[in-house]
Length: 210
Image (cartoon, rainbow, N blue to C red):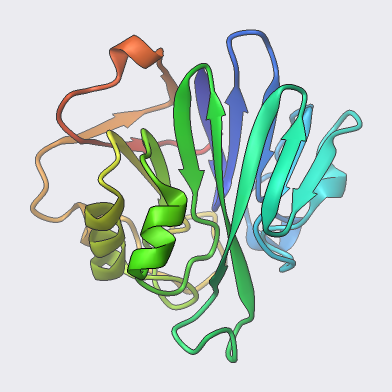
């Protein structure tokens, strides 16, 4: 499996047999260059402009939205209902967490999760190998909230997302608060990994945007 970050909450996940899943594509007003990628499946955690620009993705991808089970091209996706804020959605609406498996590796993309998980949601999400977690605050959980969610789900690999970089035009925090005091941090351009190479000890991998 190969994972590239296109900025914000948008990742390109390529399976060993060439299937491509893209998460939460943004529009040009966000500040990053639009992702130049062809996909088989696009996941959209919620209908905000910085997460739902499916039209920029090349090809004729299947678009997965909403909670429940979705099976596409041999991949099973499970959408789990959460909220974009700490007020049951009254401030910013709903959010879908997606759990799916590629090449025997279980991935979880938290979208714009705005709250720490309760016990029921932790059980729904289940065991996770790779977790994509927002850390920038303001519109999502912040660094402390992200640390708590990581503790709740205990993934093998943590990939921070939705944080401030130079191109990003949104007023959120950088990844530095989340990384403060942590030693198990690696920075990569892309992540290439097989199931048998998953680390025993949890690692944080910060990807550079493409």
